[in-house]
Image (cartoon, each protein chain N blue to C red):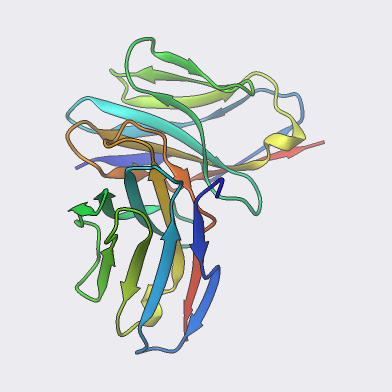
Length: 115
Length: 113
């Protein structure tokens, strides 16, 4: 596709359920980022992939959060045993090359609501 | 640790007036600086960035930002705004050797006719 896509766009779940959020980056992009954005705040870094290698997961808030990118393309962010505080917009971004200087292209986000 | 402060959460301005959106960062090493814009009902997109060289960088739609190392600032300016500039603007910083990009809380620019 022409841009970064994310699915689902909206997800409502009950507390305690697991959720999986998908990101499909721009074809050929090496780097993939996951962010969480609370209302009224900027994106908060969660994790970074260089191809399939997860090179920085320092922003994942706890061990309920995990991410993978097994073939160096599509990525999945999984939240286990969701809690109400996990409610937020989850954004994915990709960039062409490795490194922090490259332009990031953002997807539309997945709005997660935990009841 | 890096941090980014956007000093104004909302900036209302009349069409054709000048505007400045302020951004300060903290970092002890050389940094890369970015402004991203989010138009209503759209995702974030890059407006402009500073990597090295000239401290003044410009976007294609008339915005400019100046990197000021001594004041650790990267303020965004436009001499004459349009209604279509209404959006949320995010300042961001990253540094060489890492992968993390730190975003500010955002400034909502509201241009009134």
